[in-house]
Length: 202
Image 1: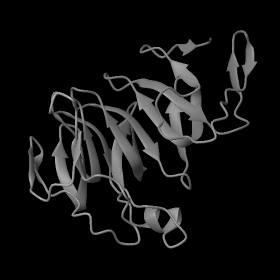
Image 2 (image 1 turned 90 degrees about the horizontal axis):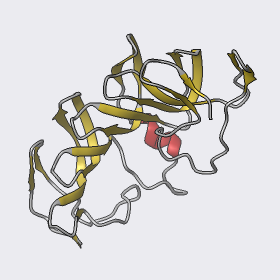
Image 3 (image 1 turned 180 degrees about the horizontal axis):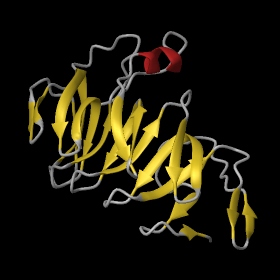
């Protein structure tokens, strides 16, 4: 169920003003407010990016999606329409940066999307295609152009290495890489670990 209501939407993160529908050159053509079949709020596309407080920190959001119980599921700090008039480079130039603690180290990251567990803890951080991270993992430092997925405990769950990455294992060297024409989100990546840090080989 969808609607184009102009009223403020009340959530546990504050009152949100949905997009009015008056599109400009960077606004996506999508419904401002969506609901689950149950009537619970599913997503809000905001009129303007807004800084909101979540259990994991204060983050800007232009699009926010929700679990059916009302907890935030995904936030997109910016959610503009890429076109001949607005490039991904222009969009990412205005994206905010935040400090994230990952496996005991602090990284300055410009997230394209943050995915939360229902508890509010971060499950994954997806980065902009032009960016790259060098993350310390149980298999050593791994470069990724997609992002990082975490367990609810904060330990690393999966990461998508850049092409050509070689990982040494007791069974020999492996070159984890999955060709995905459209890499939307960082979860369920190729190189995966148990919560204790053991490499999952399958």
